[in-house]
Image (cartoon, rainbow, N blue to C red; front, side, top):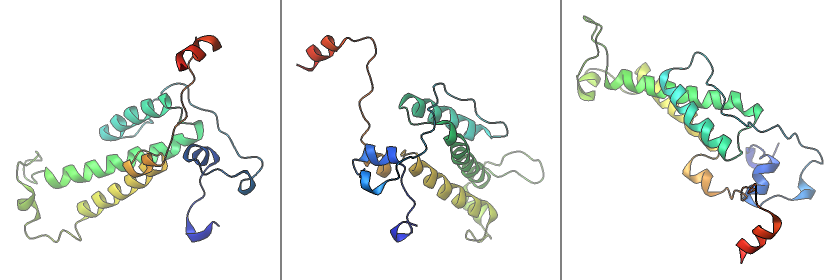
Length: 169
């Protein structure tokens, strides 16, 4: 286990961040294949999770950051966001028990006579938000984690070596 209880970073993340040292890494490390197309969202996701899946998958495929083995982690990330949004919706737009329709009451009205620290909706919302933040950092998509990544320049297709040389000048 690494010092300080931190998880190990994959080789590609170390190379991108400029902290890779050959003497501290295994000789062979798994290199999963990159996703070439945006995958469809898994079944069973709510609307917020599906929307986030489409946005993230498109961006990660474009940046060559999404691999085939990352799909389950991305599903967990999007599901955590969906859970957060559902709990938030339950708090800010609760259903009226008599009619079953969404109430227009405000948050203060909903929280009246309730302890916000023990409300299941509030606990679910906080839990979903924490999970979402964790997974976003895993993919390098939070502002702090994005700041530590220096992506290599994309390979330009269709240019001859002479054109590349002339464009550099």
